[in-house]
Length: 312
Image (cartoon, rainbow, N blue to C red; front, side, top):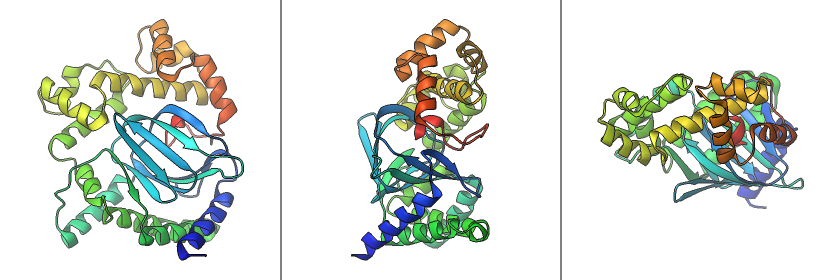
């Protein structure tokens, strides 16, 4: 057995314990989730918070416009800004999908980026909202050490944070780390669009129009439209709508809200319009979607999840 095979096998063994139930398994570290899926999932709409997804077993494919992002035991996924895309999962009872999700700690990332830029010089890479990269030996070894520590309660609390920091470092200096550093620095057009995206996620329940978002980004409306689509493969108002729909689904699932109450809570003025948009977006009525979600996913009791329900 090669070193690669043995380390992958060990990571799967550890993940079987860290993610014993299907769905989202919490950890002692607030920003860490261990995910498990025992069944394949066809293309569904998802919206990730900024974060890192490392698969130990199984395969996921993300579709954003014409781009396909494959992440599996040999590739990890990085999301620098929340982008709506569709995703499918390869998994089975015999070989479940097992993944580590690390919600991005912006303070930690910024601190490390400054140190990396001082050591290596600023990056001139093109910023990306999302990318998949090969797992090299150093990142694989860091991930294995992290999983070993997380499997022991005392070590998880004491050593876990420093090992998360090590994983951040490996990614920031990795093949596409320069793109991540530039994206998180939020400079240029990418940074301006990111400011508008932050506004959408913090105020999605309020009235929002393109002019307001363009002003938030300090851009003209035509320029804002152009660069927003380049970052998200979506128009600004399509993005607002998808954000509201994802949030409404969370409210219905976690807080047992009715469709109409959830609709008004996320900024819709018409419950019937919300139901039409919801079915067009998710492919099911709100009631049918929530019934399907409850039958499909096991969710931790959180009011504000680190990763959106639809991202499993």
